[in-house]
Amino acid sequence: MPSAPTAAPTGLSVLTEWRPDYVMIAVAALLSFGYLRTRSAARRQDLAWPVHRDVVFWIGVASVVWTTNGFPQARGSQLMWVWMSQELLLLLIVPIVVMSAQPLSLVTAVHGPDNLAARLLRTKALRFLGSPLVSPVLVPVLCMLLIFGGLGQFAVSSVWAGGLVHLILLLAGTLVALPLVNMDDQRTSLAVGLSLAVGFVELILDAFPGIALRFQTHMTLVHFAVNRPAFSPVPIDDQHIAGGILWVVAEILDLPFLILAATRWIKADARDAARIDAELDARQHWSADGEQAEQPVVERPWWLDDPTMSDRFQQQQKPPLRPAD
Image (cartoon, rainbow, N blue to C red; front, side):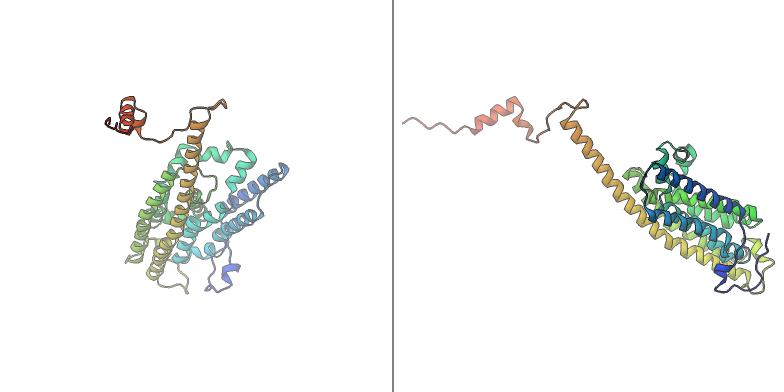
Protein backbone atom coordinates (compact mmCIF):
# COMPACT_ATOMS: atom_id res chain seq x y z
CA MET A 1 0.00 0.00 0.00
CA PRO A 2 1.48 3.40 -0.96
CA SER A 3 2.29 5.65 1.98
CA ALA A 4 0.68 9.04 2.48
CA PRO A 5 2.50 12.02 0.91
CA THR A 6 4.93 13.81 3.19
CA ALA A 7 5.15 17.14 1.36
CA ALA A 8 2.61 19.90 1.82
CA PRO A 9 -0.28 19.70 -0.68
CA THR A 10 -0.45 22.09 -3.62
CA GLY A 11 -3.18 23.05 -6.03
CA LEU A 12 -2.26 20.18 -8.36
CA SER A 13 -2.46 17.70 -5.50
CA VAL A 14 -6.23 17.60 -5.93
CA LEU A 15 -5.69 15.82 -9.27
CA THR A 16 -2.33 14.10 -8.90
CA GLU A 17 -2.45 12.46 -5.46
CA TRP A 18 -4.07 9.03 -5.21
CA ARG A 19 -4.27 6.30 -2.58
CA PRO A 20 -6.33 3.15 -3.23
CA ASP A 21 -9.46 2.19 -1.31
CA TYR A 22 -9.93 -1.40 -2.44
CA VAL A 23 -13.47 -1.77 -1.11
CA MET A 24 -14.72 1.27 -3.01
CA ILE A 25 -12.80 0.28 -6.15
CA ALA A 26 -14.82 -2.94 -6.12
CA VAL A 27 -18.04 -0.98 -5.50
CA ALA A 28 -17.34 1.39 -8.39
CA ALA A 29 -16.55 -1.57 -10.65
CA LEU A 30 -19.82 -3.31 -9.71
CA LEU A 31 -21.82 -0.12 -10.31
CA SER A 32 -20.20 0.38 -13.70
CA PHE A 33 -20.68 -3.25 -14.76
CA GLY A 34 -24.32 -3.30 -13.66
CA TYR A 35 -25.12 -0.04 -15.42
CA LEU A 36 -23.43 -1.06 -18.68
CA ARG A 37 -25.21 -4.41 -18.65
CA THR A 38 -28.60 -2.79 -18.00
CA ARG A 39 -28.05 -0.16 -20.71
CA SER A 40 -27.15 -2.92 -23.16
CA ALA A 41 -30.37 -4.76 -22.29
CA ALA A 42 -32.33 -1.52 -22.75
CA ARG A 43 -30.90 -1.10 -26.24
CA ARG A 44 -31.81 -4.67 -27.16
CA GLN A 45 -35.39 -3.95 -26.01
CA ASP A 46 -35.45 -0.63 -27.92
CA LEU A 47 -36.12 1.30 -24.70
CA ALA A 48 -35.44 5.02 -24.99
CA TRP A 49 -33.18 6.42 -22.29
CA PRO A 50 -31.95 10.04 -22.10
CA VAL A 51 -28.26 10.43 -22.81
CA HIS A 52 -27.87 13.13 -20.16
CA ARG A 53 -28.70 10.55 -17.49
CA ASP A 54 -25.79 8.43 -18.71
CA VAL A 55 -23.55 11.46 -18.33
CA VAL A 56 -24.80 12.15 -14.81
CA PHE A 57 -24.28 8.52 -13.81
CA TRP A 58 -20.66 8.45 -14.98
CA ILE A 59 -20.02 11.75 -13.22
CA GLY A 60 -21.37 10.09 -10.08
CA VAL A 61 -19.10 7.06 -10.51
CA ALA A 62 -16.13 9.38 -11.09
CA SER A 63 -17.00 11.25 -7.89
CA VAL A 64 -17.07 7.93 -5.99
CA VAL A 65 -13.63 7.02 -7.34
CA TRP A 66 -12.06 10.43 -6.66
CA THR A 67 -13.56 10.83 -3.18
CA THR A 68 -12.39 7.40 -2.01
CA ASN A 69 -9.14 7.06 -3.99
CA GLY A 70 -8.00 10.59 -4.85
CA PHE A 71 -6.88 13.57 -2.81
CA PRO A 72 -9.36 13.07 0.10
CA GLN A 73 -8.10 9.51 0.54
CA ALA A 74 -4.42 10.45 0.15
CA ARG A 75 -4.57 13.24 2.74
CA GLY A 76 -7.44 11.98 4.89
CA SER A 77 -5.11 9.91 7.05
CA GLN A 78 -3.00 13.03 7.83
CA LEU A 79 -5.45 15.90 8.25
CA MET A 80 -8.70 15.58 10.15
CA TRP A 81 -10.43 18.34 8.19
CA VAL A 82 -9.74 16.48 4.93
CA TRP A 83 -11.00 13.24 6.43
CA MET A 84 -14.17 14.96 7.66
CA SER A 85 -14.75 16.49 4.23
CA GLN A 86 -14.40 13.04 2.66
CA GLU A 87 -16.99 11.51 4.97
CA LEU A 88 -19.46 14.35 4.31
CA LEU A 89 -19.01 14.01 0.55
CA LEU A 90 -19.85 10.31 0.72
CA LEU A 91 -22.85 10.90 2.97
CA LEU A 92 -24.42 14.02 1.47
CA ILE A 93 -23.11 14.77 -2.04
CA VAL A 94 -22.05 11.66 -3.96
CA PRO A 95 -25.32 9.70 -3.44
CA ILE A 96 -27.36 12.64 -4.76
CA VAL A 97 -25.26 12.75 -7.95
CA VAL A 98 -25.47 8.99 -8.56
CA MET A 99 -29.20 8.68 -7.85
CA SER A 100 -30.02 11.76 -9.95
CA ALA A 101 -29.20 9.59 -12.97
CA GLN A 102 -32.28 7.47 -12.08
CA PRO A 103 -30.51 4.08 -12.21
CA LEU A 104 -33.40 2.39 -10.37
CA SER A 105 -35.84 3.65 -12.99
CA LEU A 106 -33.62 2.14 -15.68
CA VAL A 107 -33.53 -1.22 -13.87
CA THR A 108 -37.33 -1.14 -13.48
CA ALA A 109 -37.84 -0.31 -17.17
CA VAL A 110 -35.63 -3.22 -18.26
CA HIS A 111 -36.37 -5.92 -15.67
CA GLY A 112 -39.85 -4.94 -14.48
CA PRO A 113 -41.09 -3.72 -11.10
CA ASP A 114 -40.18 -6.98 -9.32
CA ASN A 115 -36.43 -6.66 -9.91
CA LEU A 116 -33.75 -7.44 -7.33
CA ALA A 117 -33.18 -3.82 -6.29
CA ALA A 118 -36.92 -3.26 -5.77
CA ARG A 119 -37.19 -6.42 -3.67
CA LEU A 120 -34.27 -5.30 -1.51
CA LEU A 121 -35.86 -1.90 -0.94
CA ARG A 122 -39.08 -3.63 0.12
CA THR A 123 -37.38 -5.60 2.90
CA LYS A 124 -38.33 -4.66 6.46
CA ALA A 125 -34.88 -3.34 7.36
CA LEU A 126 -34.56 -1.01 4.37
CA ARG A 127 -38.17 0.11 4.60
CA PHE A 128 -37.52 1.05 8.23
CA LEU A 129 -34.27 2.90 7.46
CA GLY A 130 -35.85 4.61 4.47
CA SER A 131 -38.99 5.71 6.32
CA PRO A 132 -39.59 9.48 6.62
CA LEU A 133 -39.09 9.31 10.38
CA VAL A 134 -35.72 7.54 10.25
CA SER A 135 -33.81 8.43 7.06
CA PRO A 136 -33.42 12.18 7.75
CA VAL A 137 -32.02 11.41 11.21
CA LEU A 138 -29.32 9.12 9.79
CA VAL A 139 -27.08 12.12 9.03
CA PRO A 140 -26.67 13.52 12.59
CA VAL A 141 -26.58 10.00 14.08
CA LEU A 142 -23.77 8.88 11.77
CA CYS A 143 -21.86 12.11 12.38
CA MET A 144 -22.06 11.53 16.12
CA LEU A 145 -20.88 7.94 15.70
CA LEU A 146 -17.96 9.05 13.54
CA ILE A 147 -16.75 11.57 16.09
CA PHE A 148 -17.75 10.23 19.49
CA GLY A 149 -19.03 6.67 18.91
CA GLY A 150 -15.83 4.91 17.84
CA LEU A 151 -16.80 4.61 14.17
CA GLY A 152 -14.27 7.25 13.15
CA GLN A 153 -11.44 5.59 15.09
CA PHE A 154 -12.32 2.31 13.40
CA ALA A 155 -12.37 3.99 9.98
CA VAL A 156 -8.82 5.35 10.27
CA SER A 157 -7.40 2.12 11.73
CA SER A 158 -6.78 0.53 8.31
CA VAL A 159 -7.55 0.90 4.62
CA TRP A 160 -10.02 -1.98 4.72
CA ALA A 161 -11.82 -0.56 7.75
CA GLY A 162 -11.98 2.84 6.07
CA GLY A 163 -13.41 1.26 2.92
CA LEU A 164 -16.12 -0.50 4.93
CA VAL A 165 -17.09 2.77 6.64
CA HIS A 166 -17.12 4.51 3.26
CA LEU A 167 -19.53 1.89 1.96
CA ILE A 168 -21.80 2.36 5.00
CA LEU A 169 -21.87 6.14 4.50
CA LEU A 170 -22.59 5.76 0.78
CA LEU A 171 -25.50 3.39 1.43
CA ALA A 172 -26.91 5.61 4.17
CA GLY A 173 -26.66 8.65 1.92
CA THR A 174 -28.48 6.72 -0.81
CA LEU A 175 -31.36 5.93 1.56
CA VAL A 176 -31.60 9.62 2.44
CA ALA A 177 -31.41 10.79 -1.18
CA LEU A 178 -33.63 8.14 -2.77
CA PRO A 179 -37.08 9.54 -1.87
CA LEU A 180 -35.93 13.03 -2.88
CA VAL A 181 -34.59 12.35 -6.38
CA ASN A 182 -36.14 9.03 -7.45
CA MET A 183 -38.82 9.76 -10.05
CA ASP A 184 -40.53 6.40 -9.43
CA ASP A 185 -40.98 7.01 -5.73
CA GLN A 186 -44.71 6.58 -4.96
CA ARG A 187 -44.85 7.73 -1.36
CA THR A 188 -47.99 9.58 -0.39
CA SER A 189 -48.01 13.30 0.21
CA LEU A 190 -48.49 12.61 3.92
CA ALA A 191 -45.29 10.56 4.08
CA VAL A 192 -43.29 13.14 2.12
CA GLY A 193 -44.71 15.96 4.23
CA LEU A 194 -43.71 14.07 7.37
CA SER A 195 -40.21 13.71 5.94
CA LEU A 196 -40.08 17.46 5.36
CA ALA A 197 -41.14 18.11 8.96
CA VAL A 198 -38.45 15.76 10.27
CA GLY A 199 -35.98 17.51 7.97
CA PHE A 200 -36.60 20.80 9.78
CA VAL A 201 -35.83 19.07 13.08
CA GLU A 202 -32.71 17.54 11.53
CA LEU A 203 -31.61 21.04 10.50
CA ILE A 204 -31.22 21.78 14.21
CA LEU A 205 -29.76 18.41 15.16
CA ASP A 206 -27.08 18.58 12.47
CA ALA A 207 -25.46 21.53 14.21
CA PHE A 208 -24.67 19.68 17.45
CA PRO A 209 -21.89 17.32 16.22
CA GLY A 210 -20.06 20.19 14.51
CA ILE A 211 -20.46 22.51 17.50
CA ALA A 212 -19.25 19.83 19.90
CA LEU A 213 -16.20 19.08 17.74
CA ARG A 214 -15.47 22.77 17.16
CA PHE A 215 -15.28 23.60 20.87
CA GLN A 216 -13.65 20.43 22.19
CA THR A 217 -10.47 21.10 24.17
CA HIS A 218 -8.98 17.62 23.63
CA MET A 219 -8.59 15.33 20.61
CA THR A 220 -11.53 13.03 19.98
CA LEU A 221 -9.65 10.84 17.46
CA VAL A 222 -6.21 9.88 18.73
CA HIS A 223 -5.10 8.93 15.21
CA PHE A 224 -4.85 12.60 14.22
CA ALA A 225 -2.85 13.54 17.32
CA VAL A 226 0.25 11.43 16.56
CA ASN A 227 2.66 11.00 13.64
CA ARG A 228 1.57 14.23 12.02
CA PRO A 229 3.56 15.64 9.07
CA ALA A 230 5.61 18.79 9.56
CA PHE A 231 3.35 20.96 7.40
CA SER A 232 0.16 20.14 9.33
CA PRO A 233 -1.37 22.53 11.88
CA VAL A 234 -1.52 21.87 15.61
CA PRO A 235 -3.75 18.80 16.19
CA ILE A 236 -6.40 20.68 18.18
CA ASP A 237 -6.54 23.40 15.51
CA ASP A 238 -6.95 20.73 12.86
CA GLN A 239 -9.86 19.30 14.85
CA HIS A 240 -11.47 22.72 15.23
CA ILE A 241 -11.26 23.22 11.44
CA ALA A 242 -12.91 19.83 10.95
CA GLY A 243 -15.65 20.81 13.41
CA GLY A 244 -16.24 24.07 11.60
CA ILE A 245 -16.53 22.23 8.27
CA LEU A 246 -19.00 19.75 9.76
CA TRP A 247 -21.02 22.53 11.34
CA VAL A 248 -21.20 24.79 8.29
CA VAL A 249 -21.42 22.18 5.54
CA ALA A 250 -24.07 20.09 7.28
CA GLU A 251 -26.24 23.17 7.84
CA ILE A 252 -25.78 24.55 4.31
CA LEU A 253 -26.46 21.20 2.64
CA ASP A 254 -29.67 20.79 4.63
CA LEU A 255 -31.22 23.64 2.64
CA PRO A 256 -31.10 21.84 -0.76
CA PHE A 257 -32.46 18.72 0.96
CA LEU A 258 -35.39 20.72 2.33
CA ILE A 259 -36.02 22.28 -1.09
CA LEU A 260 -36.00 18.84 -2.73
CA ALA A 261 -38.35 17.52 -0.05
CA ALA A 262 -40.74 20.46 -0.52
CA THR A 263 -40.72 19.96 -4.31
CA ARG A 264 -41.36 16.25 -3.89
CA TRP A 265 -44.21 17.04 -1.47
CA ILE A 266 -45.90 19.30 -4.03
CA LYS A 267 -45.60 16.63 -6.74
CA ALA A 268 -46.84 13.89 -4.42
CA ASP A 269 -49.84 16.01 -3.39
CA ALA A 270 -50.72 16.70 -7.03
CA ARG A 271 -50.37 12.99 -7.86
CA ASP A 272 -52.60 11.96 -4.95
CA ALA A 273 -55.21 14.57 -5.86
CA ALA A 274 -55.30 13.39 -9.49
CA ARG A 275 -55.65 9.76 -8.40
CA ILE A 276 -58.51 10.56 -5.99
CA ASP A 277 -60.33 12.62 -8.64
CA ALA A 278 -60.01 9.80 -11.15
CA GLU A 279 -61.36 7.26 -8.65
CA LEU A 280 -64.34 9.49 -7.77
CA ASP A 281 -65.14 10.09 -11.43
CA ALA A 282 -65.00 6.35 -12.14
CA ARG A 283 -67.30 5.55 -9.23
CA GLN A 284 -69.88 8.15 -10.22
CA HIS A 285 -70.09 7.50 -13.96
CA TRP A 286 -69.07 3.96 -14.81
CA SER A 287 -69.09 0.59 -13.18
CA ALA A 288 -66.34 -2.01 -13.44
CA ASP A 289 -68.00 -3.87 -16.39
CA GLY A 290 -68.21 -0.72 -18.49
CA GLU A 291 -71.92 -0.06 -17.96
CA GLN A 292 -73.12 3.28 -16.79
CA ALA A 293 -73.44 3.35 -13.02
CA GLU A 294 -75.26 5.68 -10.74
CA GLN A 295 -75.89 9.18 -11.96
CA PRO A 296 -73.67 11.96 -10.75
CA VAL A 297 -74.84 13.41 -7.50
CA VAL A 298 -76.48 16.81 -8.00
CA GLU A 299 -76.00 19.07 -5.06
CA ARG A 300 -79.36 20.60 -4.02
CA PRO A 301 -81.04 21.38 -0.70
CA TRP A 302 -82.13 18.24 1.13
CA TRP A 303 -85.62 19.49 1.82
CA LEU A 304 -86.47 19.55 -1.90
CA ASP A 305 -86.28 15.73 -1.93
CA ASP A 306 -88.08 15.21 1.40
CA PRO A 307 -91.81 14.54 0.70
CA THR A 308 -93.13 16.41 3.74
CA MET A 309 -90.90 19.41 3.36
CA SER A 310 -91.44 19.42 -0.40
CA ASP A 311 -95.21 19.70 0.03
CA ARG A 312 -94.84 22.57 2.48
CA PHE A 313 -92.43 24.32 0.15
CA GLN A 314 -94.84 23.99 -2.78
CA GLN A 315 -97.72 25.31 -0.71
CA GLN A 316 -95.69 28.33 0.29
CA GLN A 317 -94.88 28.97 -3.35
CA LYS A 318 -98.60 29.07 -4.38
CA PRO A 319 -99.95 32.61 -4.78
CA PRO A 320 -102.49 33.61 -2.12
CA LEU A 321 -106.15 33.40 -3.16
CA ARG A 322 -107.86 36.71 -3.80
CA PRO A 323 -111.09 37.30 -1.96
CA ALA A 324 -114.16 37.00 -4.13
CA ASP A 325 -115.63 40.20 -5.35
